[in-house]
Length: 338
Image (cartoon, rainbow, N blue to C red; front, side):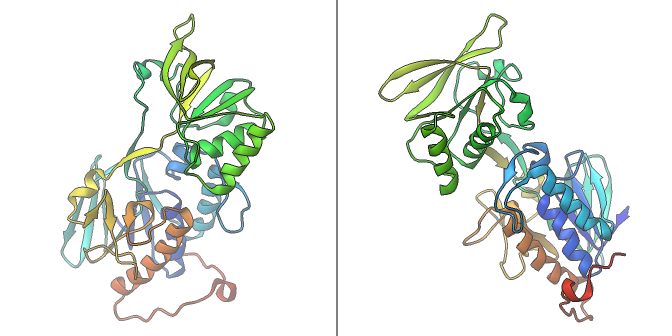
């Protein structure tokens, strides 16, 4: 049995930063994640993706951000159970919780913080006949390493931040020889700055921007891999676009998985929390990051940092009800590990 002050379910960026904030209060943390390494989606899905809205970083790659967060929290010596999925959460005597994984590893703590991101997720796939046939043969749903597309022709489909950001990155870094962005509307859902950058790249002839259109079919090459996509345009009809890679970036379909069975209040596939401290309806269980929901919720990493910071303040009060927690600024007291 692994015993600690706080069990954090999810070792993504929010979970890792929560370790740091808990450490400032001399609370020990142990993180559990189904992935084989810390970092969550930032490492598993887009480690090279640039992030623009982290304070103090005009631009930082997802993988670099995870490395910095791990370095920052290392002084507090967090424990990790990686490559295992939490399946049960039981409340036992003395106001303790026992968290058990699919491999039978048990963890005990008076406080549990759920930082599971989107939970269990699958990419949203466009309704294209035989699409699965070309997976790993030119069709990818996520970009893990942009250098994989060096010197290749790429068609990206989608209208959100991921599609916009990767189009910008591949074009500005001059990685792909040809980049086409296909979107079924003329307006985009992403940040306005990213939309403007895409428009500028299109006007400069650095990308092909095809709006009012969608990819409806795939044509194979002589080896049976992806050879071309069929783009159906609202006014121009079908366009055959030869390409090496088709990347539909339509987001992820999340599922709470076992979390849905833990007696928590759920709304629209997310855990409802009190914004005073991001506590759930079960005392001693908190939810931070993309896994939670509340009025005005923004699914941003920096919002998760704030939520984790407040959650550990209440965690301290639960663990040490007779102690007074006095806020101490790191600029005055520094950071002292265990």
